[in-house]
Image (cartoon, rainbow, N blue to C red; front, side):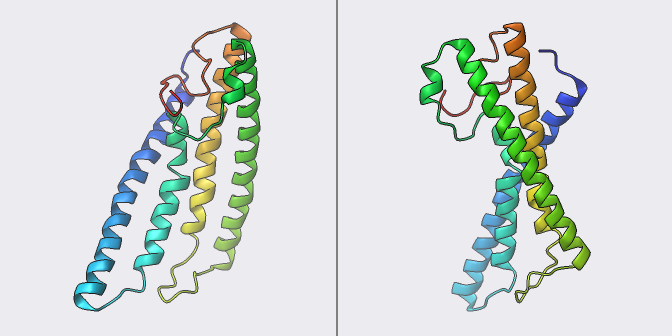
Length: 182
């Protein structure tokens, strides 16, 4: 299937999400180490370290999920699908991709409404650090929107393969291949 400029933009966004997530995991690790050193060597503590670490790891999980999906590094159980004939596997993977796309779009809409409400009321975390929740609440709609876009790409690729008989889309992963179960 020819790659459109939209497909390249989505791929680039998903790649960036993966790299940013990797950096944020490193930052979270450094923040935790800082907290440990501060507590056990200097006998002091912070009010922000644990909460910030949670937000960084949330970002890495939800927004980085699009990168994992792009490279096929997601959890899948394909025991039944693998024993099916090639066309049956393609149909099952297409059905799964359509259902996953619908699910992630629904989660994106609900999470966006939650974020808009947080923005409207100006909610804060209520902890000692008490940061505004508008930033952490943006993580889920952003991540699910990226995952939805990636699932749309997969769905298009699988549908194209089903209707054209293309053989290189047999796997439920994008064109680059790789991933779990390979």
